[in-house]
Length: 309
Image (cartoon, rainbow, N blue to C red):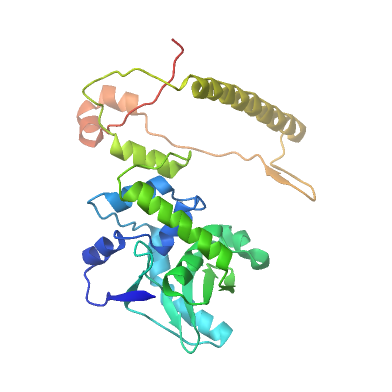
């Protein structure tokens, strides 16, 4: 059902290039529109570009460094044994589906996904919950490998440990395969960018793709009048709601007067003094231009504005 591609001897660059050849588990939730940190457009950009982007922020480093610890906590809590795989898996029927899994469960037709989460994300794991993009990641791995069970374990930093068990679901996996197939064949293969979904991830892709102003300068704006009218309505609604929000906050401040906090059984409100120090860049430029020039940094971006004709 699947082929195994050895990864033990691959360099980091080779491994990143290999991941670009298909939809992986961490892409599945984004392709389905369920990942709050990514989007179909971002996955498209990754799979169709020549560059290998490696995210190396603190959260990613913590996740990588603690993967073995999470696996050990899972073995301790579940009584099961796990091992590394050192292979990337590719589904033979759907070769655009690949899987780079964390662990295999010994003696069981199952795998394990290891996660870490910050204390502020603890509520996403309460009462048996799992973040939806992680659910899709696990079912993607089942779809690629054919394994009937996938465990997901999570260390919530400073708060505790939990794990869940997911089992094969014909309807869900069938729909997931269809969504990924349509994405790969309708967008990645022909090089057609998916439509934006309003996410920050889409902003990032568009800013990167079209960061330079075109030489043609101006084009005719066709087919957007209704959408722009709706945009104007939305901005007016936002303005009204923000005014209402400020009014509520002002009423509470008037009620609190000189007190720093107000508390009841439902809410805890604070209104504290905060000292902020900012560099007076305008004065620095006027009085010490040589120092300003040494530390000034110029960035280039495109500003989007809408004005009535």
